[in-house]
Length: 161
Length: 267
View 1 (cartoon, each protein chain N blue to C red):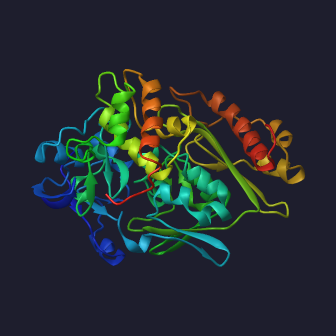
View 2 (spheres, helix red, strand yellow):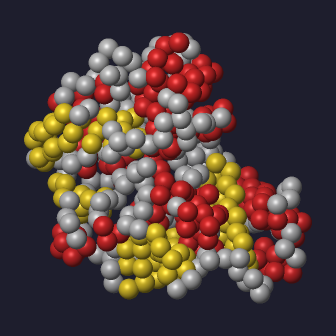
View 3 (tube, each protein chain N blue to C red):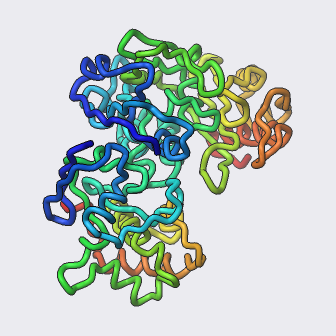
């Protein structure tokens, strides 16, 4: 068993877990943060994207033990109380989702993108969605949402999480 | 995934003590963990070297670019030093996988794994980088020995890479649209004085040099010079994504594009 300890959405979380436990399993089953989804479980679809020490990662392909000591932000940690994060608001305003399954990963990927590249053009947005799949194929509005979200974030460069 | 025991040593010396025949090194885990999930690998122990300080860092050393084995693709892709000295290498790193994979995957992990379709091996071979390990070093030229096979001995760990700086270079790949792995990738490096090296990844079980193209480029550095070189399909990879003949054709196309990119002209 592995002792893991990390900060998740600003709170300390610790547990004894099997060494093979995936970060996404730890988040969903130990912490009950079920906003992070498991889509493909093969590092392809991006439904499980969270931020680890300020960078987007696929939490189905990181061990909880590997993430121990890190600062994790999940989709649940983006909003400020009842006030949605500008990227979440942009997805709502632009109908950036159909079934919604890929949405948490899309939004986490989008926030990471804007921190790396504050004013992404459409091509940059599409390139940066290479690791996120929408099986409803609703990419058009997702791209629109991210462009609007980036504007709303005011070109926020990388900030501490 | 089968049960395993996770370790996070704090020094290379500690890593060496933990290594055994059944243990595996975990750098970024972008290949190892999916392989374990599929139960194609079942190491008894995972030794996490992803955070080892000894394996980090990008610097200039005696005119070469030194990159720690634990350096993430994202760091290589965005490093000012790499972008200035070997822009083709930075661009290659930015073409691996997707942004989230690039935040975890490492150069050492990719090169040690020697996947036939990985991108970095083409740079290591074309630039004849020195692969430095805990036991000594290997030249890029002698490092790759076959499919998933390298010159590394059991217990040998890559610590960093020393890349000679070419006068000009480019990497072009035809990606598998689903995995972003190279169907065929061609790295062309010109060191001046007729020293032109062309390395091909994705096409065969292991990265290889296309010496006929090198000779043509030495005489005439232009896309036309390689356009007439026909890569033999013998021994090339053939799978659901493409036949050996298809890959052979792509070798010429990608080489042409790489040379054109270097010259800033249309292929």
